[in-house]
Image 1 (spheres, helix red, strand yellow):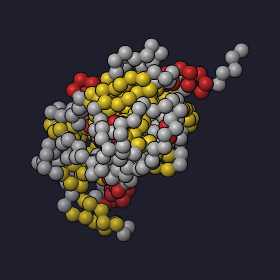
Image 2 (image 1 turned 30 degrees about the vertical axis):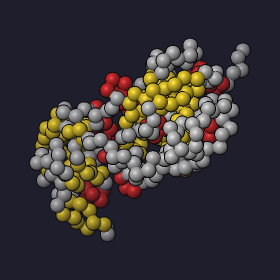
Image 3 (image 1 turned 45 degrees about the horizontal axis):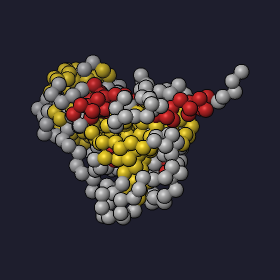
Length: 364
C-alpha cells in the first residue's frame, strides 16, 4: 500500500513543468532579477509581466538543470501576465492544465516556484477566497483574483498555484501580508494568453465609468427599495457618454455624503451585476473592444436597457520606476547563468501598486 503523501505526488507530477526565470541586465545601469513560470503548451511558458519587465529574452532553468532561452512574445501590464516562447522543451516538461473554474474557498492548493532563488520549491495552503479584486498599479483593478494562504515569497511570481490534482488555478503574483497572497486566476489566463501568443498584446474593453456598490446606505440615499447593482458615479468621455448617467449631487446619510442621481446598473448582457468586481470581470473575461453590450439599469426609478459599443482601454502607462519585489540582481557585467543552488544574494524590493481605494499591494 502506497504511503506517498498527496503533496509528494503533486510535486513529482508538476515540478518538471515549473521553471526559474532569470532576467539579466544588458548594461551596468540596469537591474536583473528572477521569478518563476510554467509550461503552458508545447512551445510557450507563462509568467508575470513584472518578472520579465522590458527584457526581450530571459534565461530559463528547468527542474532537472536544463537551460533554455525564452523569448518574450507578449506582455500585458493590466493583468500582469507575460508569455515566453521556447524552442525544444525538455521531454519531461509537459503543459500544466488550467482549471475549468475558480476554486471554492477551502480547497487545498500549492504554490510552486523559485522563492528567494530556491528553485523547485513548493508551499502548501488553501484557497482563502475567490473572485477578489486586486490593483495592478496602472489605474486598473483586476477582478477574478484567487486569494490563498499558501506562502508566496519573493521569486514566486509567475509560478503556478495548483490544486492537488495538478490543475492551475492561478499565476502567483502578490502578497499583502502574512498568509495573504494573490494569484491571477486561470479564467483570466485563458482569456489573455492566447492573444499574447497570437498578437503580442491584449486589447481590453471598457466603459469609462466610475461606480459604487449599492450598499444599504447608498440605496437609502438614492431612494432604492433594495441593495444590489452598482451606482454610476461618473461617466467620462467615451463609449458610455450620452448613454449612461452619473451622479450630480450628494445626500448626507448617517454622517456620510453619498452620491445620488446616477444610473444603477443591474446586469450586462443578461449577467447579473451585484458589485463593481462583477462588472469588471464581465468586461475583462467576456468582452472585446468594438463589441456591443446591453446594459440593464434603473434610472429615476424606472427600468431600461441601453446598448453600448465598448472602446479599447488605452495602453497602460509606463511605471514611474520598474522594480521587482523579490529576487533582483545588482548592476554589473552580465553574469554567467546562475548556479543551481541559487546562492546569489539578490536584494529584495517591493513595488507598490496604486489602485482604487488607495490600495498598495507589493508584487513578488
